[in-house]
Every structure is written in C-alpha cells, then in structure tokens.
Image 1 (cartoon, rainbow, N blue to C red):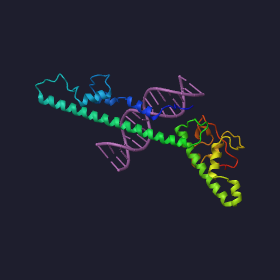
Image 2: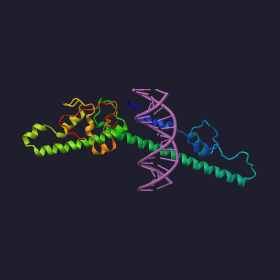
Image 3: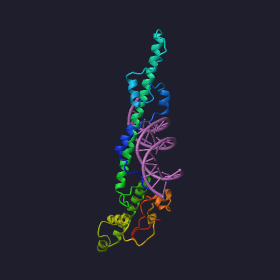
Image 4: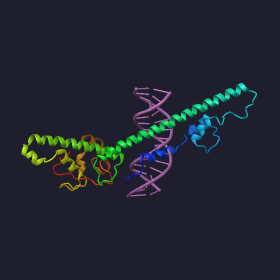
Length: 228
DNA sequence: TAGGCCATCTGGTCCT
DNA sequence: AGGACCAGATGGCCTA
C-alpha cells in the first residue's frame, strides 16, 4: 500500500493557494455581514481595504453624525483587525506549508540514501525514520566490528577478509537481498534493531516497524553480527 | 467500505 | 509583534 506518490510540493502548494477555508470565527463573528456569501476571502479583503462595503447600518439616521461616525469608526477598526488577523493567518498558513514542504524534502533526501526494494517503493514517513535509525545503528555497529577485526588480523588476512572498504561490504550485505545469505528467515532485519529501537519498537513486527509493508524483509550475510 | 497515509488549516505556545 | 514549532482536526486519495 503505497500512498499517493504524485503529490509534488509544487502541486500541493498550488492546491493550497487555491484552497481556503473560512474558520467559524472569521465567518460568523469577524465577518458578520458578508455582503456576498459567494465572495472569496480575497474579495472580502478588497471589500475591507477599499471600504467598498460599509459595515455601518444603513438605517442609522444621518443627522446623528457623531454617533454615526463613531459607529463607522468602530466597524472599520473591527474590519481592519479582522483583515489583519486574516492576513496573519494566511501568512502563517503559507509558512507552515513551506515548513512542511521543507520537512518532506529532507525526508525525501533521507529516503534517497536508504536502500529500498523494490527501488521504486516509497517508504512512508514513519518507516523512513525508523529504517534510518536502525540502518545507521547497524552501520555503526558493523564498522566497529570491522575495526576490531582489522586490529586482530594481520595485514595479509586483512586484505583477504576486507578486499575493499569494510563499510562498503557492509552496505552490500545490508542492501542486497540476494547477497550471500544463508538464512532464509523472512525477517532477519529483526536482528538489526538497536537497543533503542528495541525499547520503542516491537522486534516481532518487522514489516510494521522497520520496513514498509510493500518491501520484502531482507536477509543479511552470515558474517553479519546478530544484534538481539 | 474501512483503514492508512498524507496535505493542509488552525490555534496555542515558545522564542527572538 | 512576528516567526517557528507543534498537535489536533479535517478531508482527499488509495488499497485491501
């Protein structure tokens, strides 16, 4: 079950700019006498800014200038406050949208460096974060193991054991579902749970907590240490 | 159709 | 005061 994948930020942004919902207070209290229910918020802004649609009661007797002026002043100030409020909300919505887009971009960047199978499978947000956490933890642990092995092995043995960068070997083991895995257990990545993950995630549910349901559970090479 | 995921809006809170 | 961050609400889309 992959979520909608064609929702680019640009598209979302354009949709967001078109989508506007008038909140209850703005609709009923701040804008009590909307001249035209079909007017867009921008129309209403024009209405306020240009004073095209006065909020003053037309039934006010014209001879009571003082009272009328005071009433109009109050109504206009309320309109201005309402307009300012609405402008702030619109700007805040825009910032929030951009903030979430930035967050999603960062999440996409994170996804791009994580191995996924199949390649076009898109991890959900929570899956990406959990997977990245465990992936980093596994890489770190393996590097430490490799360092220890390097220290204990002689130069010749080292060359045979680690012909290339040990971390590269690790990545191969981690990422390739067809790597020399002898274990056929469907959820070998359970062994990659970090201590922290074990505290917060259920190791028994590999598909939910570590990998997307659409992605297969990977096997690791026999040389990969068991982290239980 | 229910449930999951997501984008967006919104009001509150904290910080500068 | 204004911006950043957060969490709740809402509605749309997609899949089983």
